[in-house]
Structures are given as C-alpha cells and as structure tokens.
Image 1: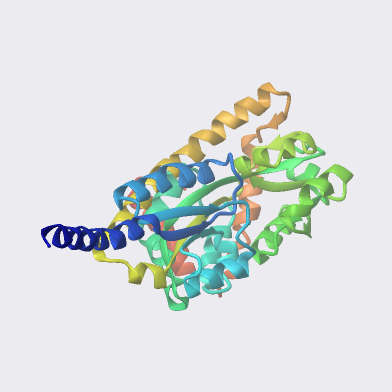
Image 2: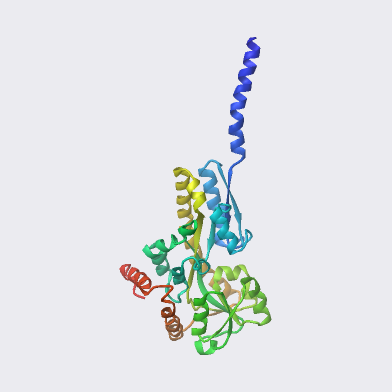
Length: 336
C-alpha cells in the first residue's frame, strides 16, 4: 500500500511539472517585418541584439522571428498584420505612412534636416514624438524613429551643378514631395519600384536614383551607378511600429521590457547608420567610385530650390509645424 501511495504521489508530481515544461517548449512568437536585407545594420541589430535581449529578459517566454527584405509582404500586408495582431512589429517610411496622416510628409521636405544634429533634435523632440503617435487611430503604436539615412544621388552620369543635372531622368518614389523636389532641381522624375531600379540604371532607362548609402551598397548600386553625388537633400527616418493589439495584451512588466529594449537598440541603430555612412563613403572612394562633393555654391542652389517647394505642401504640412521644428533647432543652439 505504501508503495502504491508513493507511485501516486510521483505521478501527481509529474503531472504538475508537465504543464510548465509544455509552456517552456511553446514560447509566444513575436514576428518583426523589416524592409532591409540581411547584412544591413538595422536587420543585424534586430536579429541580433534585440532578439537576444527580449528572449533572455523574458526567460524564453517570447521568441523573436524576423522577416527581412519585405519577406513578410508588401506595405498593405504589413499594416493589416499590425492592425489584426498577426504581426507584432515592423518598420516603414513616413512617405508610405503619410496616407494615414499627411503631416508625416514633413520628413520628405528637402533640407529640413541638414545634418545629424538636426536629425536627433527633430526625431527625439516634441514634434518627432507627436508624429510617432499619429497611427494610434488605426491600431498601430509608434515605438520611435530609427534611421534609414541621408539620401544621395547615385548616377551613371555625373553632375556637379543643377545646370548639369537638368533634364536627367531620376528614379522617383510615388511621394508627391519627392516628385516635386526632383522637378525643382530641374530633373525629370521617373517613378518606378525599387526592385526595378538596378536594371533601369544598368540599361540607361534612368540616369540616377537618390537613396541612402546603406541601401545602395546592399543593392550594389555602385556597380551600375559609379558616380556618387553627396547632395544630402533629405534624410529618411523609419518609424518602428508595434501592433497596439499585441502591446495591450502584455503585462506591464513585459511591455516595459519591449519598450526599454527597443530604446536601447534605437540609439545603437541610429549611431551605426550615421557613422557607417561616412565609413562607406571612404570605402567606396577607395574602390574607385567617383565621389562628388558639391561646392558651397552648388549646394546652396540645390538647397534654395528644395526649400522653395515647402510652401506647396502647406495643406498637408502646416507652416506652424515646420516652425516648431525650426524653433526646436534654435532652442538647441542651431541656426539652419
């Protein structure tokens, strides 16, 4: 009888352990959709440091799965995935997201953020924080801004002035601001998908494209566009987004873990993009890429033409919002 009771106790103890073992074997899967490929600083940090930190801090209760290079789906699929909670995190450009809040078009305005100091002041200041929350009405929480980087022109034909760039066909996005800016520079905007750009440059369908240096190098654009013009005409941030449905389902402790871990990685990511831009420029120069630095006069000409279009979008981007940005610069001791 004593042996039988001991066996019953052992079975009971084992049954209590089984659910715990089962829970450990089935963590909650957290899916993250990224626009950049493997090897890009953003992808490597999310797949590396962010994933490791979340899984360790939660003792394996969450598992991070990363879908890079648009592998989760197109823009619409990402937005819907976040809204319905099928996707937990994603990154996207304010250009695309501006269909939900036109004020996000502010990030497309040329020469609004002329250097990295301006970038950090705007993105981390009052305006940046308010705009990061502009998707809450559609069930998406903005965690904060990460860097895509400064846009430069990658050309199969060089230019040093606006006069030389006149009528050149430039691949453009569907952004109205982007198209208007390209026209203001005297160029001929040619909208096309990013996936078609390499071939278009190779075949001469377009003479160039403006894109950040990390994306360009990842796509080997310098092989077909060996002239890099350091125009720096605008800077592109990406909004790192979370599904409100997912965040609301978390305990306060887990929510804090996700928010604090993102904040840690955000600082590293932005710094990696900024320092990496300068390193990549020197690396490309050493590899024989024709790196063209605009003269102060030429840069001023582009800057004046770019800023002149700001007024054309005052219905989408109120002048008062731009003034808030400029006031933020002045408060930080910067006069642009």
